[in-house]
Length: 135
Image 1 (tube, rainbow, N blue to C red):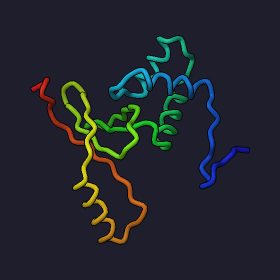
Image 2: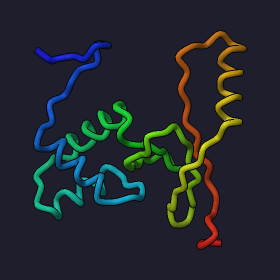
Image 3: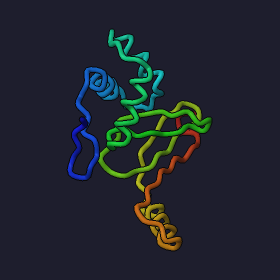
């Protein structure tokens, strides 16, 4: 039987594999794919299956511990995130990423949700371009 917290969310026990993925995530500041994280774990001598890496990352995304970004070609990449809601500027050339806040985006999102009767709305925004170093 799985334990749950006050709002019914399952409480996941910290397995060796989940801890290894979390430690790997703490070791870099850029976005990485699940495959790259899996390779990093292998280089460290950690035996964690790729499917377990994907599941751990998904749980971390759901828990707000990790940012998930979709590249322009649709690949999912991950990075430990800051504690506040934010958006990303992403360089198409080198992958450099900058966290940015967008109060106008937040106001627009609330207005669109209200106008159409939506509640419990969330959103993500990634802006792709070329960073100053790559221009």
